[in-house]
Amino acid sequence: MTKVLIRGIYSTALSKFLLDNGFILTQPSKRIVERLNVEMLRDQWDVAIEARPWIYGITIYGTKEGVEKVIEAFHKLGKITINPSIISVGSIYSGEVIGTNDNTSLVDIGSHKVFLKSKKNVGERVIVSILKPVYSGIPEAVEGIAIAGKTMVISKNLNIEIWGYMEPHIKENLLNFAKSISKGGWGMLLLGLTQYIEPVSLLEEYNALVREGTLLLEKGISTSQKIGLIRDGIHIVRVNFSYDAKQTLDKIRSQVVPTVSGHHYMRSLGKDTQLLVDFAENLVSSGYNSEEIGNYMIKTFITSRFSVGSLIKIRHYKPNGERIELTPGKVISVDVNNFEVTIRRQFSGEEGIYDGIGAPKEKGDYAIATYKMGSMVSKNTYYSYNGIIKGVYINISTPIEFTWDGIQYIDLSVDVVRDYADQVRIIDLDELERYVKTGYISRSLADEVIKIAKEQAELLKTKS
Image 1 (cartoon, rainbow, N blue to C red):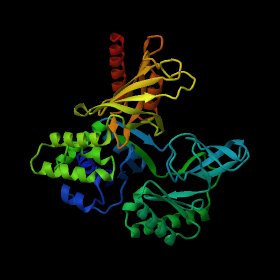
Image 2 (cartoon, rainbow, N blue to C red; image 1 turned 45 degrees about the vertical axis):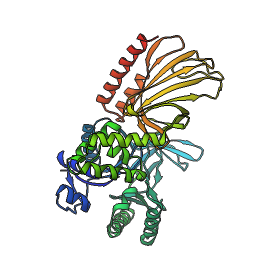
Image 3 (tube, helix red, strand yellow; image 1 turned 30 degrees about the vertical axis):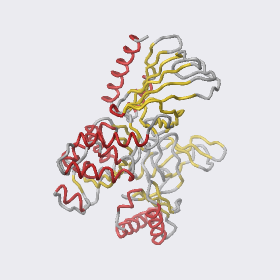
Image 4 (tube, one colour; image 1 turned 180 degrees about the horizontal axis):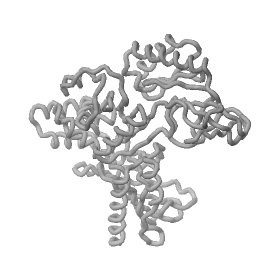
């Protein structure tokens, strides 16, 4: 059975969920032991889960098999998107140089092509390692070995670095500790997870990795062996829980402790929402209705952040983690009861053609866009300076969420347009299929996107 360590803002709900799905909790916090009445196991984990406020706020670390099992379970929660490092961190490969360019070399390692920042000869065999997570493009490797543990990677090619978010004071303390234990020229990359681990455990892991790495260097690795993986590293995957998945987690948490509807959505906005959530849950524990209090809590947040005339940002993420800042807009109406905001986006007037609708860009153009929290559909209607409609662009995404200064979602590729020629089309279905093939989204979510697109297309056809 897969042993899981869990830390962060979703700990109670995820611990309950994974226990119910056959996983074993290891090194649980004192609070989780008390809440779930579980044994305080001290075993090493197969998978560690760190959760913090961010759109891809869940980071999973572990073995390939363990990470895959956790992700399979997470799909039961609702709409999620997966953003994996395309190669494991701290992995060692035997490779062959297949190309050179200036001061870099392209190396075939079997499962991937990687590049080195050094010029080699084509046909030369090399031992390479991956030091950091890579989410797009061609991974960068270094020549030589890296050794991956549970919470860190060590290598002679590393200084002392941290990957992942930490509060500044925690990061400073951890860096100072790492400097105090480093030896023999072995640098280390500390994963965000290390902030939850006792220093004595980090020291033990570092020393064990140094011993293994030193022995490996003494024995040497032959470059004549078969191209491919020599030693696997840490598999890292970032996960987005959409608004509906967070609602599911609210219900799971409510089986353990009083939980207001909207708990995980509000917590995902950062620590500044903590007091509001705590106050709401005090009311729930006193007998008030969770749904009613939750709706009021979210309405309070919306009205405090959005008012007519305010400027809001649109954070448009791709499933691979890429963020695109769209032209922001000014609020022209707020329907707080329906969690809906309508904005006017004024464009710069630069020359060109609008994607999808095929209309020419002209000075004075603007768009009216409506965003409803929890909806997978957002509609942009494009106008010329004198109010003539140029086209309609409907984006389909993960359920929309409001943030401190705007809205955010993960684009699911497929869009529905009424173009400049007044033709209604569904576009980018091929891109959706690529995301399914690469594992960023599930087949069931893709099918739901296609269904929504067809419904929206029919609505556009019936409206003038």
